[in-house]
Image (cartoon, rainbow, N blue to C red; front, side, top):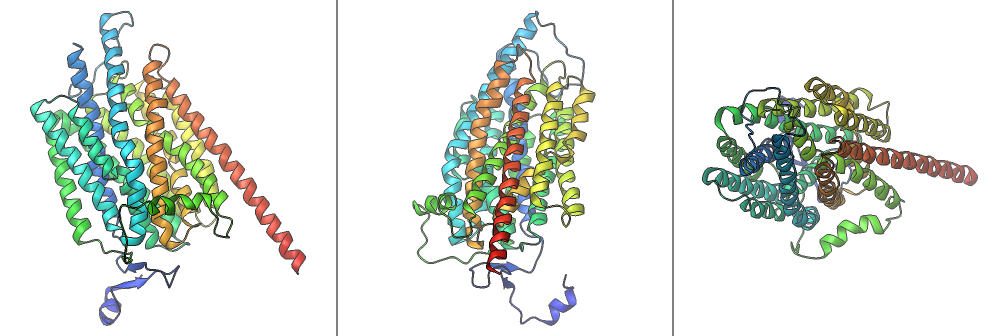
Length: 479
């Protein structure tokens, strides 16, 4: 790493350098190392509480409508309810109605974001990365402001649907993630890309941990209004930083249109047309792994929250936030430590392999946990539960060209949006439907998804080994 003196002595050097993997590309890299990570971190600091505060606020409103006593700001207490009592029946009804509201809001965001992320991601390969992470910041800000108005004036919950649609049109979380990961690939080399993408995942984890860890005490001390004021403020700071302090890496190409079907063509041709490197089947298999693992990550929040708020656990806002922060930090820290220590000895695919085991164990343990002590032991089990996603992102990014990174991560963002939509119907709906049987069934389904991803990774490893063997035999026969 250059020191400050050497930089000052050579003022004739440009502020931006050509991308090391492609000297003829339109991608340049700034000398400053830490650039995009604050955008990702601040985005999730402000985005996560919208969901966390929102689900508790909706739960409290629904509970009020059903005459069920619920106070997420209250002290922790033993709230076990007799299953045959009227109070238990009210709680069950509140759980079912709340789960439907969470499903509706996720659909309102997800459906428009499936298309907007493809457009924004492919467009960023030609017009620049900044629009791809500025748009979702604006969309999430509008959603936070809407929640703030609904809470303040106690408006009908239906207004939240409109704000979710607006956020989806702006790209939502998918666009924020794809743009930041594409930016990270722009400024990294093939050798350090796995670690750089892991750092981006950690930025997400840190943002989530700060958000969920502080949201609980904030709700308890101030109610639901103040968190949304803070959320809006953080988004404004992030928007200012993104607009004025993040240098562009992609040089805008002439005659680039935003609304064009070519964006969809550029994105999906990665999976339907090979470029001569035999990468197509690899991208398809890795996308399947990504889909099944992301489905678990995206779909676990709702059922987890409902189980934690329900008897006999009855987490209040403080304990709820503490658990979410601890689990997020455990998953991200485990990934960072593993990659940092074993990156030169273990390949990305083996990291993904062990990550699937961690995800499976986490969901099985959470499904069976029925005391607060066991719930917090899940934090230990989840230490390697998020390892698979950054590794799959890294493997896929190494298979495409620099100016295809936006399209690649756009396809991942669309897959993530489909994961959110599918998982809400599969996991949240399953949780609501099986409350009277066992509230752990949804988490067993999540573990099943991790198992499918594990089997697909094994298939990938076998095919890669066969390909290398054929290439070796072909090379030997030529010589």
